[in-house]
Length: 280
Image (cartoon, rainbow, N blue to C red; front, side):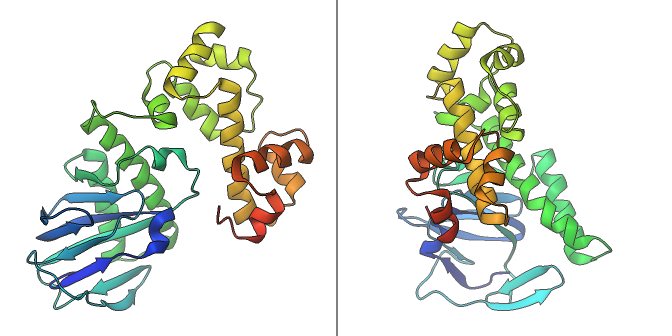
């Protein structure tokens, strides 16, 4: 809730996506590098894939940023600047690895509107859970941000059909490759040999190789390994599984093979990556 101004310039946000959803009222958004504030109002959604510094204000003016009053309201943390009468927002953060291709393929700022039906539904769910916490609210709230992120990506790609995409995001939107890429992302541990990928994409081997190179910038085999390593990095951060267990669970045949491939992509060994908390 904002009736003053609030800045978000935390350098640690470089590996976090941040979304603001204006649920009531109106105000202004001042973004680093821009000279004029942007008006925002009920239904507007602003997504910062890489946590670009910005200021939210009720009147477009700002000076020294205010520290919001913070209180816990059930599952939600409520931050309030001023009397909170001018603008109300839902905000969420998405933490990710620096090698997260979908995030890296997005612009610094994505502007959407809640008029998109699927986004409207998720935001309505968040509002309902915040107003009337019920049994299972924690589980619902924990699950919805992931859904929200996917829907934001979909809405952005539908809204800006002519935007210049790159990497996995470009391949994900390709009519011939999108289905296959989603399958690999969902289950990278499967045995993704070239014959299986050709069948899934319904194209010849030569066509598959050319299309992956032109759309994703990688060969099919390199793409599968890339996604496996990303999942492996996540498991190293989030689970107590041994390096061998992680390697096998993401589709590598040995710890040695996984370790060498991991070091090429992340420039540290799996053990060192885990020790440093995945800060690579």
